[in-house]
Image (cartoon, rainbow, N blue to C red; front, side, top):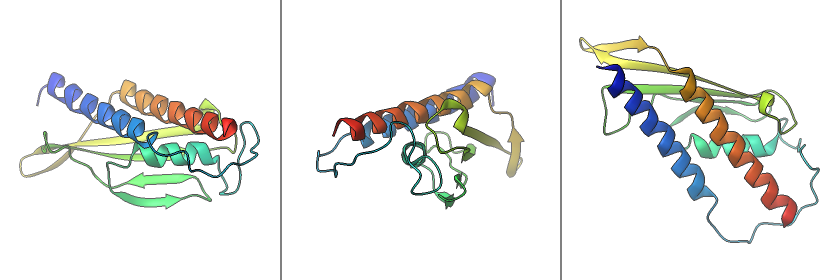
Length: 149
């Protein structure tokens, strides 16, 4: 597998996550109106905007764990159907109750098919940063929607 093919597959995953995040913003305006604090929502133990945005962003992959009290989301291995010889697994940790960039940590693992099994492969740092950016953007949109409602 070439570095170009690997980069292309991960880029496809990031683009897919961005598309799914964009689609989740579509929908009716039948959401309940709430008087929420500007950046802090603590009913689930962590910032609910970051939590929802994280779940929306990784919804293309099966979930292994989703602990809203601890702020941890772990996906199972996901292989893009267009490149089944590569798979990724993500762990998202929400570290704070505030909607801040440093309250979010994304870790990704990647494996490639080799010799009939799966072998660990590096994940580009830019991929993790892009996923964090997608989640933060979605969380800010969710916050903006709830405050303006």
